[in-house]
Image (cartoon, each protein chain N blue to C red):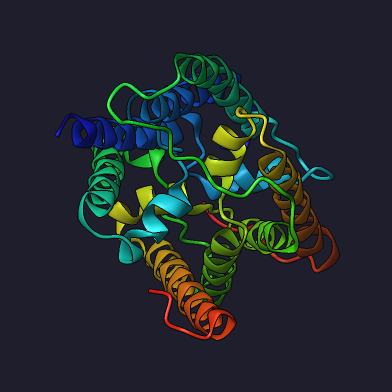
Length: 148
Length: 146
């Protein structure tokens, strides 16, 4: 139960952080990515201050050995840079540069009900689902038997 | 709107850090939006419920921002529907294939000094910048949304 409260609070705080920092505005994100235009460095400060906080607390948490409310940390299993990582990040960047939206700000902005935002989020979720479906069939083919 | 806003950017960034640190310190989870939300259909039980609750928190925050000041959220009225669809498809597929987005790789992974996340962040920043360059300065199309 406590873990759910924490998850909820984190969701709220994260949305507020995105709104306060201006990252819910695609125009601000695009202005950061537009290095040869009227460049707006705000996004770098958002990332920088966020990473700084995380550097301190993630290190403290790891030193403690375990999270407060869970038996262990859930970390991504892969540690090697591979083609999926680079290809996926590259595709994501192109989409980010096209719309100025990454997943967080888009989901938060969906409450506006504005058509372009809703269309973006629906396409994004559909595309995630398509990836998972492809991945599931590929896994079945790879292993010869059913995986899930 | 497109002027440098150092105070708001820093305060907002600190809040993003506090939220992602809290989720890690308390629950041991990486705050990555694409993974948390994208894996809702793949999970069950308590692994699904915290994701749904987190999503509810994001939307609550969105409603709060909207109530406080409507201009804090984008209505993105200048973005065309075809562009939104293309961007959504690329972001959805790319973040699942690359296992993360600006939050999981950019804010958390970089702070964990994960090699994968540092590479991913450099790559999506680079392709994002190239895309904006092509759209704005080669094709001379409008600069996107609100």
